[in-house]
Length: 236
Image 1 (cartoon, helix red, strand yellow):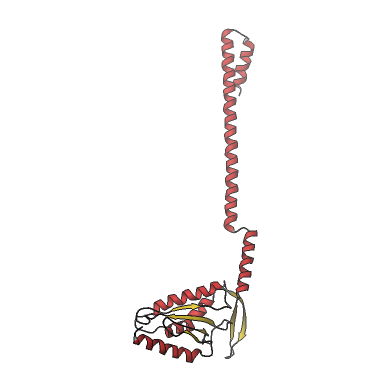
Image 2 (tube, one colour):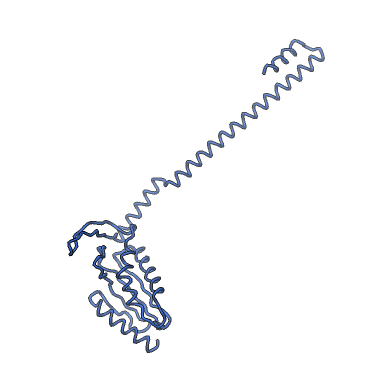
């Protein structure tokens, strides 16, 4: 890294150490790529989530801040894995938006995370366990939220899976009803076809009998039977 990059990283580390020295701040690797971590704790007075913070890991390449932003990873053991992934993805996206070559970005990223990002990302019903009303220092009421632990999240997801397997979804029920309707229609179509076949067979049988009677009448053989058959056919 250039001298300017080293100076920028040292200044940012000094600022972070002074702010988060009581929040597990640690430089894991002092040489590039520099790696450090700390527990981020929101300073927003309206922050409504009962958490002890979020453990963040930063990896700073030797091309920072000249051309490459640092990478940030959320790795909070008290959070479900999916929530850590969600936070990491959001931090990565926001870092790319804020980064300008030659300019430091970590302080700006943490400001966004503190004032807007973290609260919005945690406000996800998938990961919220419960909520309650409490009084604030100013005397007003505030709704606060607790998050699911990794074990609690897995238990909820398992319960959902069991419920879905025992109770068909609306889509599955609609598909089942459509299949039953199609089957009934197929049965009705088959019955109608069989009925037409029987009618055609009966007509053919009557026509053959009539023709036979006419032949017999023409030949003078059993004229009474021929007359009866002709009369019978004409009455159908």
